[in-house]
Image (cartoon, rainbow, N blue to C red; front, side, top):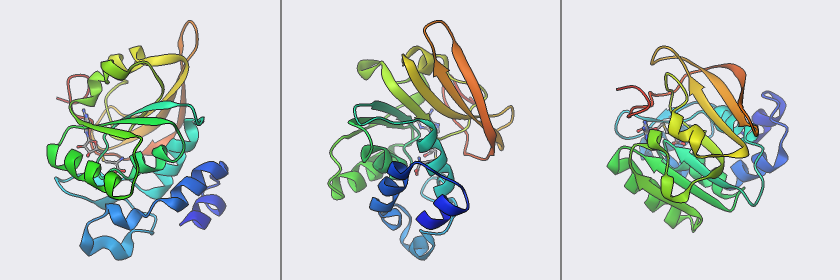
Length: 204
Ligand code: SAH
């Protein structure tokens, strides 16, 4: 999986590849699918949701240009896999998941792996997490119609946010937003397909 990310997908940030190499993806997928855990596919998890494709996890993580001191907000924790990868690279991860059973399972898996710098909360992540704001980086792992305003407000100046944005619920474009002292700069990184971001500042 790591070789494919480096050679075929041109993921160049070795710290991202090292982090992904150190997280057992099979631990985050349902028992029946464990044999497929290191293929380059999204896989179903509970509650009709998915664990993202390894390539998209690598790409989003690389686009954040993480630093060890960063505090990162993650919206859509799902299985907890992306949270675990982030946890290897930064000082603290604040992960929000709207489905209670998924939030509980993600939390259990992270504890079982001895990952102690992730806080998991069950809530609508489109509101951000005011108590711990502002964040150096924000990763949204579900597709919304636009960037939720509270997330822009909770991003530090100089910070970066990565999110799939699309006018319909099935396909999106991967967008990176960088907050400069006086504006938000958007860059696009191609098509992608995520489950919908559902909430007050997402799909209803
Ligand atoms: N990063 C996850 C991907 C999970 S799929 C992983 O590695 O497994 C996206 C997740 O976003 C789903 O679990 C879905 O329930 C969640 N989600 C959708 N809208 C949300 C919202 N407003 N707040 C928090 N989580 C949300």
